[in-house]
Length: 274
Image (cartoon, rainbow, N blue to C red):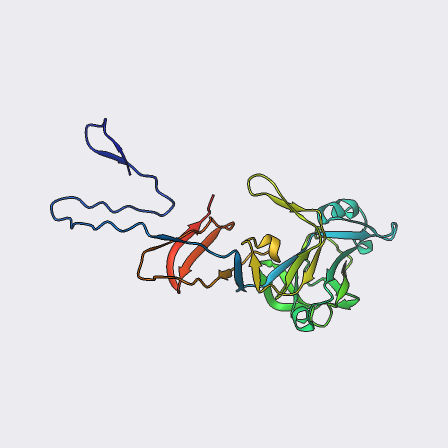
């Protein structure tokens, strides 16, 4: 607390974090508070165990397009593809999304994946030539994002997804699609860091093996570049002289909201950290 000695009364200035409060005790009945020793600093490892509570995401935001009058073109971002085909008769529009699966992935990881899109039941979506059926009543994030089963359709190596409208009424705009499942995402390029915690890459992404641990604390660079869900990062720390007071040095997380627990006991909420 900073004291302003020039004020008529004793004034303290205190900056509050969101949802934070300060309890002020005054008067003769206030108990004497013992000063707590500063304590020693505990350093954490840069290796974290990963336990994801929601599926990982692989973003499919680029696609190629084809009409009866033009051969396959692209790929470009889905919005760009739609700008090129929106003026053609809807029965002649075909969109193609492509992705790769690492050869070292196990079948059990790719067989349980699901495909999410804003294309409704009237749109026929095939994966490697076989139709991906809509899962009735199932949706992701929002009811307009339907979920399709791709069990048995995804293979190791290169995969192709095609979208056509069976009723000759391609009214939906071309939009990104999403693969969900227990997998990691590999980047073949290098990550480029910029100001304000910006990060980008010019590399290609591929579905890879699930991630059991990360190094450095960055989910984006360690298999979760498109992740939006709930995940637990943990590590075991050996404490010498546990009877002494300890300090834990923890950098602000790169996430919207985070709860910190020590030995399953809640310690602090980090909300929208700077």
